[in-house]
Image (cartoon, rainbow, N blue to C red):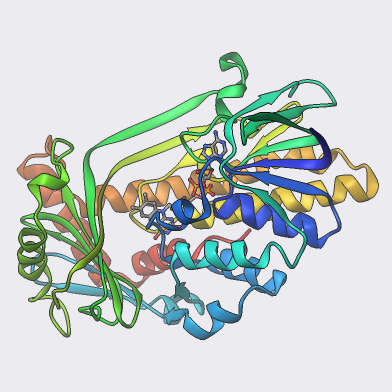
Length: 391
Ligand SMILES: Cc1cc2nc3c(=O)[nH]c(=O)nc-3n(C[C@H](O)[C@H](O)[C@H](O)COP(=O)(O)OP(=O)(O)OC[C@H]3O[C@@H](n4cnc5c(N)ncnc54)[C@H](O)[C@@H]3O)c2cc1C
């Protein structure tokens, strides 16, 4: 069967669903194709800290009832050494805040709103392939129910994450890649236990980096830095809880509460930018074009700013035929992406133990953290990046 639409979106993660809803609300025809099932998409536990750029889009769409009711407004966060906690009062320093609300919940809200709003999402689409992206009539094919289907579109947008098909459809000579792979990963645990502290704590202690985070007043998310050679078999739950108690009991208000893991996983850390976000009639948005280490919580929020820029450009094009905004999408998005890459890299360098570092680098980290503790200017620089730079 052949389907025709204005925009074919590959990937139904947060960037694909957000873009689909924004285009749909502007009366632009679009179809989203996703390789996984809805349950699989919702099973991925990832981001939890939302900047205004993300919450504003949800509000603009009117898909914000649960976000308003359940999102936790956070006016600060903490950087800690083994025994000192430096509170970054983001509200006092910037007049703004962030909202703690899980990526899973955002995705669920966007997913559930799709049928009522006429946003077509095709799940479990196998072997999605992009064709004719350098022509004015690109198309997407996929397999479902034993048949090959085809979607003809004016544009294709690759929102299919780091391992997707869209970025690979762009010829190597048409783009530049920038990458930094970090020599450790984050071991995460999600559990229905109250958080140990009212606000996030990023800690750099003698035993390495750890993060105490949360998804709600009754659901905690913790991470610790682990060598890339570690697997989940190395970390029975009790070993991880012991480690978290050691790290956070001296630093937190309530101490760590243990509970059965709802999820445990190890994520590698990487900084990556693919420098072009447009090739012919194909655009990239979100993790398909860039990755940040999770330190500083920028990934989902960058996906949202890409989508804000791209939806504006596509809506302008379909209303007035204006090609300029489409041409400007790559430089406009990259300007914000590189600043978020810098902040995530800076915070990763400041808060982790790098295997190659010696005593000098540790003293540098200590000196920098002491400077953060004593300087309002430094705290303001951190706070304004943390709440998100303007669009
Ligand atoms: C452990 C961890 C913690 C994080 N914490 C934060 C945080 O606190 N704050 C923050 O802002 N960010 C955070 N991030 C980053 C954030 O999760 C990502 O930036 C975000 O998911 C990007 O959304 P996306 O829609 O671009 O990509 P994805 O969420 O990766 O979605 C891509 C979608 O495309 C689908 N797909 C892939 N290939 C194909 C194909 N060939 N055909 C069709 N569909 C395909 C996938 O199944 C997926 O559903 C974290 C990430 C990790 C791993």
